[in-house]
Length: 140
Image 1: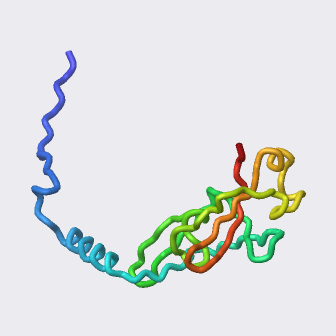
Image 2: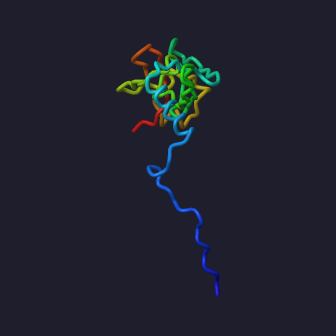
Image 3: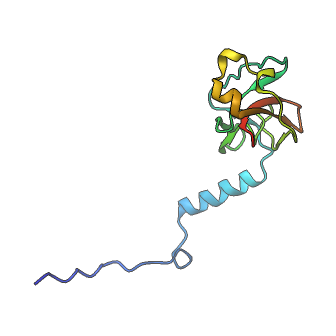
């Protein structure tokens, strides 16, 4: 016959019922500092985008992400190039309403025949600093 499970010797404690400790207090202080921080984000690693065939517009991909850290409060954030600007780190990157020919921005030898057939280019521009990227997207 199987043995009965041993009774847990320490009862569960709901977070609201436990006494606050030193770490809890430090975390509250960090949250307060970060909530009032004027953030000065910087890249954690270099992130170089290749310029497209159109001067001033850089090639990117939707899933292309980067890590940033605030120099003032040490907040780390992960962002993607189509949501947060890689130049000024502000949101949002605004997508263009219309698609354009992929080969206007990407050289023919840098994209596959399938990409050329099934994808078009969409421009994303930062509302704050004007930084602009082009992203290949599937078209209907």
